[in-house]
Length: 465
Image 1 (cartoon, rainbow, N blue to C red):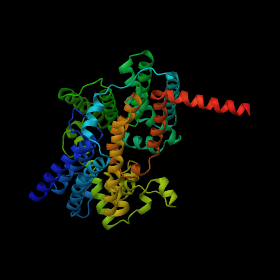
Image 2 (image 1 turned 135 degrees about the vertical axis):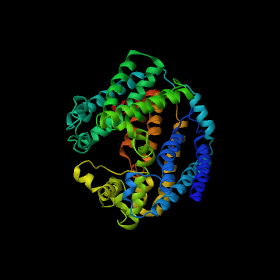
Image 3 (image 1 turned 180 degrees about the horizontal axis):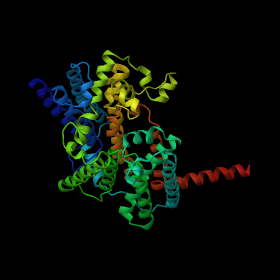
């Protein structure tokens, strides 16, 4: 037992120093992409729980399905390994690029966002208004094609079978999933952040109206299926947007206040969905929100290790994103769904079983074993640090701030959701493409003017000929 605790503390200290070097700061008053990944994806969602699991002190219901108890130590050692390899890769990449992340982060936080009216700003407003209209229509489309809306049923008092209603709302959506996911769940919150930042800095009627409409749509999209964490993450996105826009200062009192608001919001949702009895388990370390944070994300990793070591064949290329698997002429199989079917078949039969997502190493191990764990750790760390450094280097405008906030919050969540989204993610690609166009219209309008002049000149020559 003492050996496990000693290893845990040693790795914790080394990992913290590496993450601090890669991020530039782990201070809670200077939140950034790497620090949130450190605190949320690794420390809270993975590393603390791994110690309890290794010591067999978790008493968590999922791990009652573990067939081979030695997986507790095996999994613990893998988690310790990636706690070093991941931030070490971040640091090595930063050194190779030759930048000082501490200086970059400080400069980024001090610079005021550019919200000036540039020539051709009207083109940006037209584009933003058009995208906002699409987002509102996508929200209406989601309402229209969702067979049952759990939050409405809860308000109406029909809360007898909310678990199956949540599954039905997600799996039996009768519309086009891409419209809902891209133009609703992705586009709407990002546009709301852009409008929010402009409203904070300009305080005009247009930006205020745009923000409140998009805010209402975003809140609905994040709560209609009664998922508890998305609305808290959206609140975090709003706070980070205000912070990066220099409209909100972080200090200990405000951080504690935000934590209290988040806990109260989660408690209210737990009581609404599960009844007053949920209060009793709310603060238990292995149940309620605390158990969900400490164990729900990491426990399935141990089940992955157990199953794909002893009873299930490796997924290989079938574990890759659907686009890549299609190119290799195989059908995508998500390990989280396989594990749910293998470990909790009764939930599948009852219609309440979804997926057992976990830290990305679970999906990597299910597909390619230990070599997959090593390669994917290095690859994901490179992607994360590249985006982080680019974020700190780009011009600071409402559009770039919104994109930075989007990835600052979504990268940590994706890391504890699997590896596939880091290999190929069409939604992230669309986010980058869409916001690149908005950035050009917002910050580089002279480029548009030059392009139009060039096209006019070429067209005139063509006419003369």
